[in-house]
Length: 297
Image 1: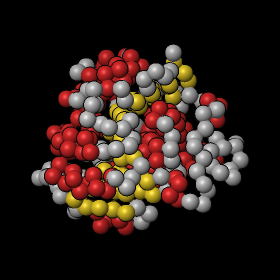
Image 2: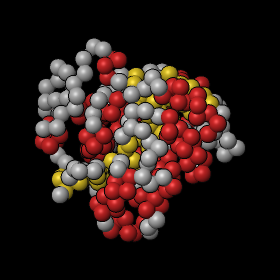
Image 3: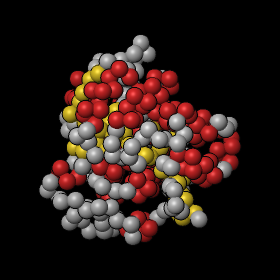
Image 4: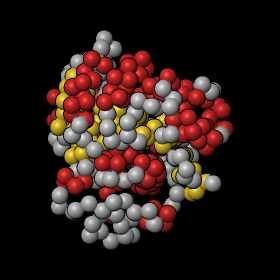
């Protein structure tokens, strides 16, 4: 069964309501992201998690950019670790990152990773030691190529992918995924047991034992650098708040797409920036009546 995601559907599937004045009740997200060339991805994902209502964010990234990120995202605590020759986070830092993850309610890995092999190695080193929900974004899903049952991942997992990344995992051509995005997403959920959020012109969310959800909001302006990092951060922030994995993915997909619609109406169909998306989210959450004290729109 396929279900169209609307504001009405989300109002009937409300997010957990935290105590309005207690940041700890809104959860802690760890964002393992970025590289020497892409520090902005960590910023986009971390800020999106906060805009989704997460109470606290930690960022684990390469040491070379950590001080700059700490300034750019003053709300977050930023940790710097060793990097490879390609500027990627080194898998040798996995034990130290796991120590930080123990204090987090959700761990997001992958936004802004630039090296496929190093991404897979880092996730392989982290996965067996992580507990609680895990979001694998973008190149971090390379780990799934060799671990399609995700047996090493202890908690629930959300995979946030684009058609090219999903095609790589399923050993398909991109055209096959684009012709049947729902079938491709369901295939990966069937193999892995994970919730899959597939981006594209129509977003698709699949979860074991649940209807397939599709989001047709959004437009061409969302196809911009960093947009996927924002979406992954929204998933992590909602998980930190206590949402179930499929709920977090469905809500994040709709919030991301609808934020794009709001910017398209105000700024222009194309040319708005990924860093502008997350700022639209708090008002959208208020309109849906998910914020304590807010009045539904």
